[in-house]
Length: 176
Image 1 (cartoon, one colour):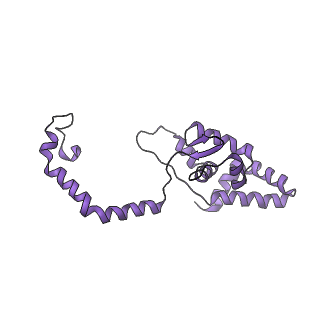
Image 2 (cartoon, one colour; image 1 turned 180 degrees about the horizontal axis):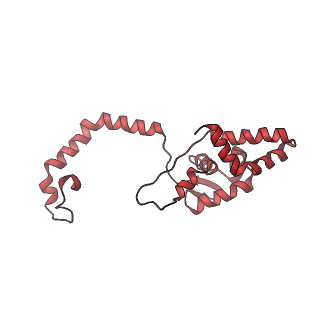
Image 3 (cartoon, one colour; image 1 turned 30 degrees about the vertical axis):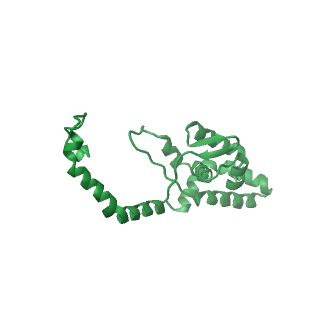
């Protein structure tokens, strides 16, 4: 999604709040509009996409984070080091009263934990680079480790099935 579209999306949700704050901070409407746009564009420079596994409800909470750049920014900022409300307000340029709602929502749904006065992200955030490194590791170790393990399992199928546990009569592809 291009920045113009994202800017329009976030300004629909937060424009009045951010613009009023920026005008109060600068004292001039034009400067306030420039500051508000700068704040929003800083938020837009991060993108986070949450997913899940298993049975998902019709509208999971992860969708609400994917739809909110503010919630995404909070999760990213609190990932490695916990941040206080004051630090988050300073880093995002969003006034504390407007951050508090999202912080409470994220803590209630256990995306963040509150330790003392610091908020910490509770889920792992991995980048595309992580998946590339993992793929390279898999390719480099496949012959030495993974293929040997799979070969061992296939060659010992009878021993694996011998305790007669539930599922021991499943086809081998499903059993392994």
